[in-house]
Length: 168
Image (cartoon, rainbow, N blue to C red; front, side, top):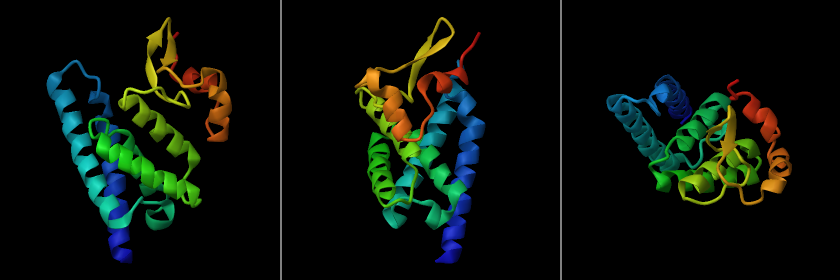
């Protein structure tokens, strides 16, 4: 079992590395590059589904910090596989309740899943676009409480978060 978990951890970190290398193609003007991104994220989403079937959510206790974060990244980018994203969200919720996963990652995945479902997000983690050089979030359920909710999940205030992406 320990060998299996080490192999699983390596597989997850490899998936995240491939994801990071290819993410530049997500919004490419080249259809072939966008297609390569979609194929990669679909393959990873399918594999994450199999991993969840066998192990449940891959927590840091199970596979280590880096591999657990990799699983979250794969779930974040499974945008065209809402079934996988929703399952990951449920399993991550249970892991957070048990104290084995970070509320911050859960908040990002919850917002991503809500936006992909065509609903309003909670924490303002998903950016719809840029207006006058400033990132604009997808609509939020309670915009007036967004920073309070972000703080509860361990996320910096929205203005600090978007300052990292702002173009001047």
